[in-house]
Image 1 (cartoon, one colour):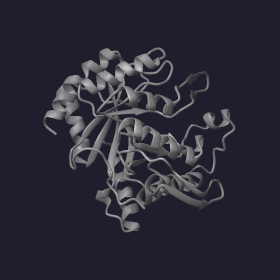
Image 2 (cartoon, one colour):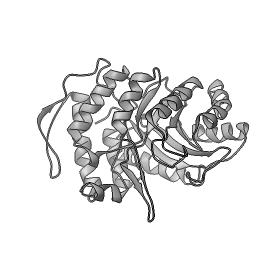
Image 3 (spheres, one colour):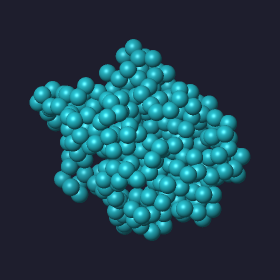
Length: 308
């Protein structure tokens, strides 16, 4: 089980990260190529963001449209090598898309590439058309996740796993070689379901919830997380809380629903609300997300960082 709270940065500080655009015709406008994403990630670091996050999807499918998305892990590895200092990870990786042993091996490699800056975000997935597209079973998602997280946790934390499940097996599996930074890769689970909270309390260091344009409904989710921790004898404060926040900028495209809108002062106050609720990392999803809109957000970052 997780001892809890493995997370980069000083205890008590609240940091800001950014959700980089990776899909067609979304908040970037057109299709962000790697060169565009690299520029955006570099600007985010330049203006004081401490984390870069990548969505893990194949496609987004609606009734009359389908948008492709870049493969997350390859992109994360490239960005980790190219952009120093910031943490980086998937928000969040779907365990159903890859064998849990492969996830652990990729984690170790990217952790070594990044020099210890990788955060492993995991979830059970939600977008059924992606599963159907590649012949992946959609349900039972949480039962499959429960087996996968046990294998991944063992391989990352102990370097080994021996597990015989209905959906996944690890037969005296080892995770070698190890990253030079050591075995303390933070594990973050993104979900607010009751069963997932139970697994989070057992195996994860951090929780992610989102996307929000206000604090409505968050207190109830925090209470559920705390109760899941208490049920297994874990101190709830050892779970690092993170949230995704949707923020509209000039030229809002409508691709992030119910975003927060406000002046620099109002936006900083909005971020402070989440800080007061105990969140240690806030992932900002801007709409639109271009070099210009990111630079326009710089005064918010500077003011928040100056008083955190």
